[in-house]
Amino acid sequence: MSEPIRLLLVEDEEILAGVVAETLEMKGFAVATAFNGVEGLELYRSFKPAICVIDVMMPKKDGITLVQEIRTIDNKIPLVFLTAKSEIQDVLKGFRVGADDYIKKPFSMEELILRIHALLKRTMNTPEQASASGQCRLGEYLFDYSRQELHHGNGMQRLSQREADMLKMLTDNIGNITSRKDILIELWGDDSFFNARNMDVYITRLRKYLRFDSNIQIINVRARGFKLIV
Image (tube, rainbow, N blue to C red; front, side, top):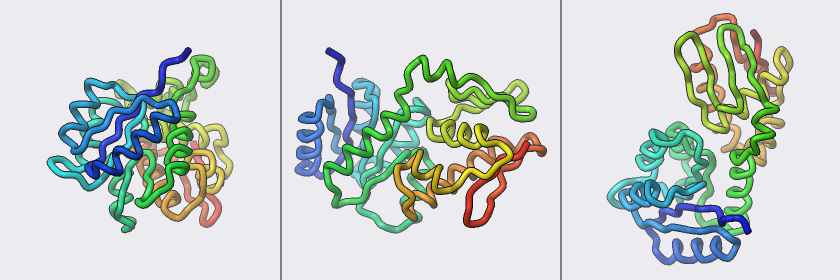
């Protein structure tokens, strides 16, 4: 019998945290719960979760800061924000610091579980899948999808799983338009407005990573998608 997936829940509303944790445990997860960002970081280090679900507004240390700290330790672990804020700038700030997805309160447990499984499916690749992915030369860069690395000269940029997935979609379709909708459906599960803004943040990151070779461009094809040109 396989080990249950370890999930770290960081939520300061104790009643909500209890309901979420109990439901996730019924679905087969091993859940550790913290009630503020300081406890969350301590539990992250000791519990070693496979995925984290983190509230944005918390005492002692907020979720944005906690995610930034986790990302300095692990660039791959999927992170989901719980937020009562609907303002897009707050959601985008979460993505900029390293969140992979978000869900707005109040939410259904079914939706949260679907998002968790979607992230785990994308991040927990088998060795066979990784081996088949191989490496790709992009101008002066070497893109290693399986290791989530982008090499240039003596330097190396580690990529998050979603950054690597997005760059792979573009390289698999190099010179052609990769539609916005295809990227959104494949990597986020739907093409909502908030996810579309999130995708634009990731495109900006990839352009920054590839800036050292002027022959590489990610072109925005208005209302259609993106084209990677080398």
